[in-house]
Amino acid sequence: MEDNKDIVSAGKTQLSDLWKKEDWLAIWIGFIIIAVGAVAVLTGWFDFSALKFKTWTWGEAEYSDKVVALSEQMAQGAFWVKTLVTFLVFGVLFTIGAKMQGTPVKKYIGAYVVLFVLGFLVRLISAEFTLNRYLEWAFWALIVGLLISNTVGTPNWLKPAIKTEFYIKTGLVIMGFSVLFSNIAKFGLYGLGIAWVVTPLVILFMWWLGTKILKIDNKPLVITMAADASVCGTSAAIATGAASGAKKSDLSLAVSISILFTILMMVVEPIVLKALHIDPLLGGAFVGGTVDSTGAVVVAGTALGDLGQQTAVLVKSIQNILIGFIAFFVALFFTTRVNKEKGKKVGAGEIWHRFPKFVLGFFAASLIASFVIQPLFNTADVNAVGDINKVLDQYKNWAFVLAFTSIGLEINFKEIIQKLQGGKVLALYIIGQTFNIILTALAVWLALSGVLFPVPQLS
Image 1 (cartoon, helix red, strand yellow):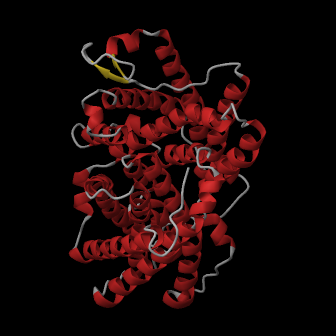
Image 2 (cartoon, one colour; image 1 turned 90 degrees about the horizontal axis):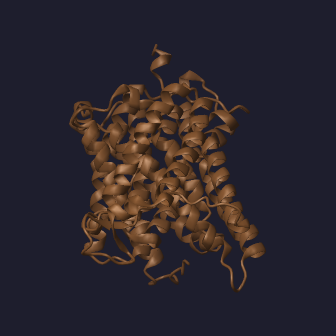
Image 3 (cartoon, helix red, strand yellow; image 1 turned 120 degrees about the vertical axis):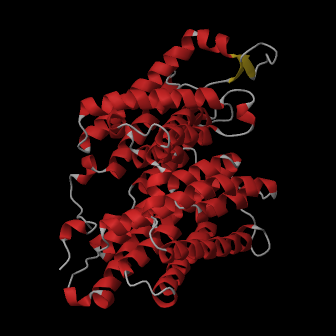
């Protein structure tokens, strides 16, 4: 009989999840920032702007409205006031969130200070005139984190602040305010066609490939790898691993492989799409459907511009909704077919438990912007939603900077390579992801090229 402690826990939904679970805390923090930003803009009582570096140079040769000398930028009092505001807003809110999740306050605060300083350096580096022309700030955040983790190593005292998913989810909730519901409505059926048709087909293909062709006996590992590659990386792997009774070692292997290829795809896909001059609408949808992690999708989408980022996030958000349903059906399948002798019961509540709640926050923010702020405050002379988003955009970016830096700090290539034992599992992922890429490319072309359906005009 297997040791239950080695099995990924399925967990249960409880009322305390509302103030203890990461997804819900991300929603509350996101909405606090949205609310304060809206009040600041609509009333004009105070300035809630977060820090944004202007493109800078060391000298004054490139002096203009868009390119300034670093010394002048940092000599302005407003620069340091905005730095302090950004530091305190995230520091207070994320410290409370970390405390609710069980992280000691003292440990988190010390680690957060260093993580914020790293984020500050990332924004500084990425705003330099020459460097800014080659890589977006998201990639610089990843590079800084990777350099630390793969050289001197990420110190244990810094790890309490490395909460990648927490920062990503909060940033996505804030981002939801900028995605008007009209765009979701315009893109919804296209997104469903791309995400909800391709994803199940990839899972079925990888299950068949793993169990019938590669003959991998560890079936929980196969289904975990399939969900990992086709839906949303770690989140889907955890949910499916719990539903299938996978061992923690299986989950670790699946996530390690996913991380390795996610980094590769996150960097290479935008470069290839730009080189081929692929329209950002199609490119963003392709990224959203093929890159595993939500955070990596945002990084790659950002490199394609605002439209590419928005499209990538919409596709990934629609795809993320499947996590709960997939976990439910995997649990049902493994209980009734694979492990039916165990007699394990499966309830419909599994769908809700596995559902990524932060997606609700993303869509709720969009609904508020579209059906509350826009009709009440937008006029011919005032674009309230646009003005609020100018403030929120930098908070979203800072949340992502903390997340992307954390991603780099979490990744140690030597440790990942050590976990890649045996060629079958690696072959399963590579072949399955290749199938996913081909199928997604076909679905994106059929849905968004204009050949079969009108191209959605996103504002």
